[in-house]
Each structure stands twice: as C-alpha cells, then as structure tokens.
Image 1: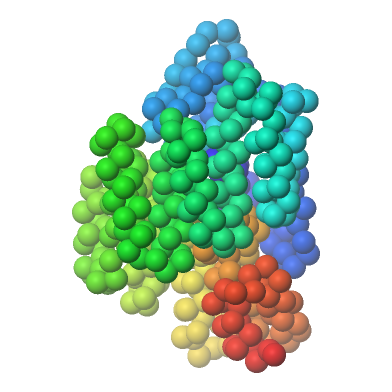
Image 2 (image 1 turned 180 degrees about the horizontal axis):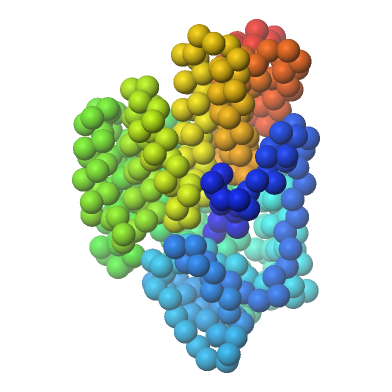
Length: 383
C-alpha cells in the first residue's frame, strides 16, 4: 500500500511545493487523517470512493458502493487500498500509521505488534484485512530502517500466515529488492524466480511476472548501455498500455543509461514523461525525480560558466529535495538524493556550504551506514 502522493513538477498544483522544498532542512511533521469513506486507487491513478471494502485478496478487491450496490476490481488493476481509520477499534492501527508517516519506524513496528496481538480485532470479519495489512506495513518499516534481513523475514511471515493476502506479490517483490540491496544477488535472483513461479502456480496477476522479469534483467550486471536498453525496450513492448507501472519502471532505467552516456536531453524525456503521466508507483516516481535531478547536476558539472552552473544546481536540487520530502521511506533513493542535494548546495557557493553540512548531518543521523553518508563526509571534508 502506497501513501497518496503529490504528482509532478509539471503540474501547476505542485508549484507551492517549491517553498516547502527550499525549507526542507526543517523536520517535516506529517499526520495521517481518517477518511470519511474507503478508497480504492487504480493503477491509472483513478480514485474509486466506496462505502466499504468487503474483501481483498491477491485475486480481487470487492466492495460495497456508496449507492448500496456491490462491485469488484481485479487485483491487478488496483494500486492501493485506503481504509477508513475512524472506528475506535482501529485507534492503535491509526497510531501506527501516524508513526510511520512521522518516520518513527521503530515505534511503529512495536505498535503494529500490539495490533497483531489483539485477537478480538483480528478475529473480526469486518476487520479481517488488518492482519495482512499490518504485517505488510511492518515489512515496509523494516525496509525503511534498512533492516533488509528483517524485511525479507517479514515477507516470509506474511506469505505463510496470510497466504491469500492482497499484498502477496508486493511482499514477494519487497523481499527480492531487500535481498538485492543487501548485496545478496543469488538469493534475490531466487526470490524473483519464485515470484515468477507463483504467478503461474497461484494465478497471480500477470503484471507481477513482468515485475519479476524486470528485476532479473536489472540484477544481471552484464546488462548495460545499449544492451540493457534493448532488453528493457523488449520488455516494454510486452507491457506498455497494459501494465504501466512496469513499463514506467523500465523507462526509468533506460533514462539512467542515457545519463551514463551524458545524453541528458534524451534522459529528461523519459523521466519527464513518467512524472507527468500519473501512472507510475511511488518508487518509480522517486527514481524519475532523482533522474531529472541528476541530469541537471551532471550538466552543471560540465559547464564552464559558474553562474549557469549554479542555476543548474538549483534546478537539480529541487528534484533531489522532492525525493527527500515526498518519498521519505525510500531507503534506496533518499540517501542518494540527500548526497546530491548536499553537493548542489556546496557547489553553489556562499552561505550554501552551511546548508550542505546540515544535510550531511541529517544523513549521518538517519543513514549512518549508507555508502552515501560516507561519501558526503569525504567529499565535504567532514570528520
């Protein structure tokens, strides 16, 4: 389940975000609000408001409509489910959500444990969704804490205890990505292969098989440059228009190959189309904003005119800070974005050096073991 997100730099509704981004060094406080109804978010971004979600499995999501009728959506069409958190019985669950949004993942894990020990709640037919949802959110908490072993183990627990969970495929994918980030390529490959197998054996939505195929392509370090582009384009040809979240994730990686070749104009076209299209998931949007930032940052490094370079760094920094503020639980991309934000501040001269140092301090507090934290200390000559 992904939290609702502002959309794109090209959408006028986001203009006000610039002010927030430029003051990003102040700690943001975000609170979850109870919804007056329940919502089903489709892959195309459409929000379906319903009176009540009555069932959710990896096959389908069923609901009672606001007009009193009933309906269903195939799970492969659903990106996110939002439950009404107003009932008193969900107070602890709502507290855990607030803690996640406030980035207090350790406390959130404990409160979710309390939720999972409430047998009366878990045995209630009305709230049968709570167990799978809470276990999945614990996986996301551990992932955000860079506890990749814990996230992988949490995924195994969810798949064993709630085998028909709406989050079955999502948890399998998180497990594979956690193993990859932990540097365990062999087990990550096995996890992607297992997801491919489950798509066939359990009749999971086909898009998850394509997600696994994409993961395996990216895991193979022999795939780079033009070779990687050809394989990604071949995958896109089978999913574009059908599974936009998969297609957009592949397009991000094509954009990244163009950054490596310093073809920033081509890269920007890929990233810009993704953030403007509204059909990417949160991780892909974050990667696209990061890519846009890297285009301007790398272009600035090549400029001989310092004034023009500073403008490029400013533009780049807006996108790096978008990742930091809007996708704060993305442990794979936020440290990298914070590093490049610090570099933008540092290269802009004047009193921006102090901002770079403060960003480095935040990195040290939040990601003490990240390679990007070590790099920022080295590049800013900090002890």
